[in-house]
Length: 588
Image 1 (cartoon, rainbow, N blue to C red):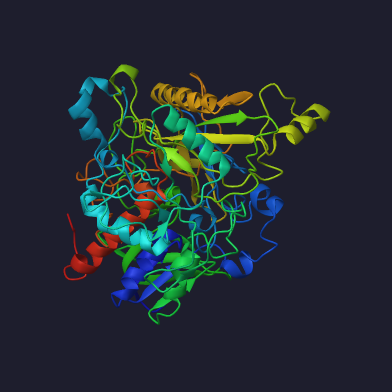
Image 2: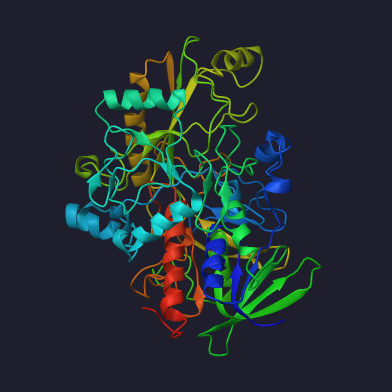
């Protein structure tokens, strides 16, 4: 196989961004995606894409767990078992990856969360941190990333309302977020229209003294052409975003917003059905020589390359590093090693408000990124001291479209089947408002990823083993947020309120969906003893390997991760283009 300048493993958001940026620099780029080719046509073609049974229930766009899955256990003394059906999180499969099936909520990051450990130590002292917590700073600042947040929003066609631009407040009274950091430019598109349910939430939150704002959404509020020349159409609130390919070219995806530009570049090649088994290393194991993958005919193929970018889903990045011998596996007993450490997820609490027949929420309409949120309890915008927990949470109504099979909410006490359940569904389907607290999740010494000693995938390689459970800090935080969220729900004047929140002693449950916002395992930082990657997402151990994605996050954010993932990828690509290509070697 002819040697490439760059080989990219996985073609979701990070793979697509890296491919475009490095191909633009004149490099020969080969992208390997283990799943099928996917695009708006035919995968998002109307009307067959509006099929809840195929996509939400049978999970067409998600990973084939019969060939590869994860094993899961709660603690280091437990036996991990492989899961053939995942509910808590849903990794994507195919060209576009999770960027094809995501919802479209497109945040930046609160600057505090980039230096979380330092901030907590400065404000609250070391004694405030829970025992066993492993939070770390990212090693990069918001100011360094801001130009990349701005460009990513322009690529995504993000709709929103800025609070301040270059120090000047522009969003007061218009739906801006007063807690948001300053920006160098406005959003490329104005915020989406507000659903009735979101407006009710915003009015109730404002009544209680909070600060509601329009969610930043990568669902286009109008026609748009991005900097790559890729076009988007205005969202029509069909309600089929998360788990679906958008038929209207309205939801940002690698397939819509980057791939059309890459197709015009003769130095780029995309190979679907190419399952990478390992990154190949030189004799001294200090540099990568390329990758070995299995093609669509089942043949093992070696693709040589000067630079390897591992840009698959979060835990696939970690597993490929472990399988390839890149870095030292993490050992929770000693705290030594870097690959697999600081695995984190996201906290979530949900409150549902049920109204009488005169209040119509019409939840069957919606857009994945549309809604109204508050940040009053996100990051460290409130005094954590009296409450005894680490972490914060935005809260919102994000009406993405309630489906008739999977999304029907009924008040507490309703039977799970039968005529009484049917009556409750008919009574409440268009009269319910659902709201969430998507809380940050901290990393801990004994939540980590490693290779399973027993179970293997279809190629005979060890599965990834996930050791994970909730801690008291997580429960304390999410219950605090649920209580605040319930207060907003009650201010809306419903007939009934139902709160769905974890309790002390609850274990991680794989059966019910939360989010697919998994973090860590190949984290970035400034110390090779406690991070697998440096601040440019470059492996400390193998200098021509770069690993973008949420696997680089030292802990989970309050916000959805995609915006930060994209900005960090552009940041890394810039370092490769401007520094690494001139002098290959360690960038930090």
